[in-house]
Length: 303
Image (cartoon, rainbow, N blue to C red; front, side, top):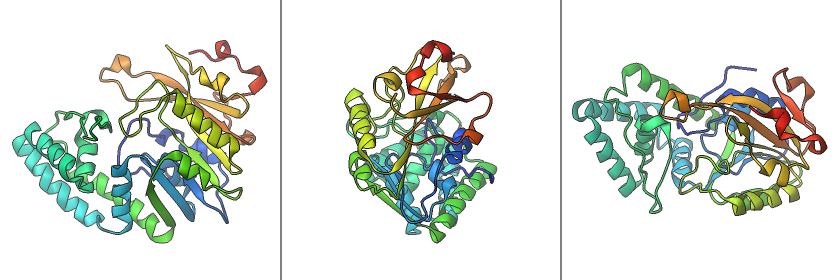
């Protein structure tokens, strides 16, 4: 497939490295909608490039940013000017300026401030407190916005903006249940929910009740779907693959996440794709596995 396009907003758990596996099993709707109830970075849909799409997320700041690209309130040129200005202040004032921008964003919610924080906070995390305030600390790199880095971000914005010119994509701030309920049998749903027991924030908090709600919604939908989740890492296994999702086809692939602060904490994970249709056998490489529901055995896939 073509070169993987990377979106301008960074977030933990981004699916850039497994986009080829996901898209190899995707049926792009010709007459229906591509639907993402958990947009996040939007990397999968960005690379699927459907003609018609609904991207939704409970985090209003993600939706506001991409809506600003759609309406051209933010352009590649305006983003460059903004990042050059704020980057210069960051070099001059250091972390004090980062926290000034964070306070400004938490007060006004400017999408360009959200972009700045996304690209200069610790480890590219998106996390909010119970009051809805962005609370990720500074990455401690005053020279973060060097010319080459700004150009990289600007190019990512330009690529996404270009896709918006030729595709009918809608962005909505709403709960996943409302999003999935609008799907018909001609639509395709890609779900990337917060991983139960792993990294979540206030807007995307996730517990067993939410996992159960999502299971019910996807079990009842007439649309085809793929859902990303985790199978296991060297320490833990996702028990809900058996207790909830075992009726569906499950494909696994090893994936490396850069989440921990220390190198020792950055471990590989066995990623799982759950789907309500047979996977494409050509997409399953030697290191991947198709888990038949009746034969699912954690011990055979432990890390």
